[in-house]
Length: 165
Image (cartoon, rainbow, N blue to C red; front, side, top):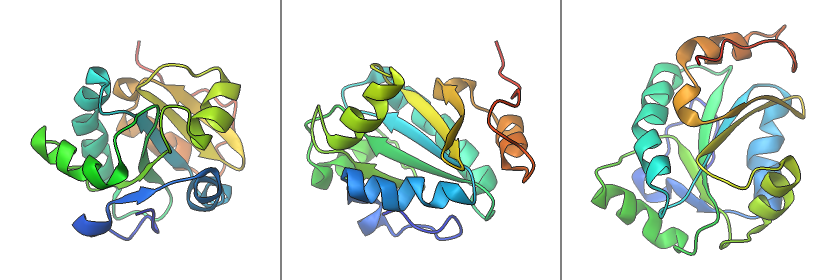
């Protein structure tokens, strides 16, 4: 379940059914005041699953902070949200950051957010704040130094972020 950055979701409510409305309420609205790092993934995407431990390690490094948060959104996937947590556990992936599930392969988040940004492949991360994309790319390229930079109050979209080659 999406929640305040300082709140660790309980195992039973880690994954929330999503829609464009809940995506707006749970991700876009909070990004007005603090960067929200959104990791888009799917159960059928091997590279997505390989990137999840990295995203979890970043989450562990920032989980007690109130100035930045990480969320995951399952997109382009037919797996029911009720089965996602069990699927992840079967792969020995145990994220503690909040997650949501889009509605099917062409759910509202994929259709109204990813497609207009030209994102047609995953894994993909968007870093959002003040209605702007601060950074976008493969989750493996995201690092703690970049999160630190993006969390600074004076950081603006378009400011160069250290992006390891």
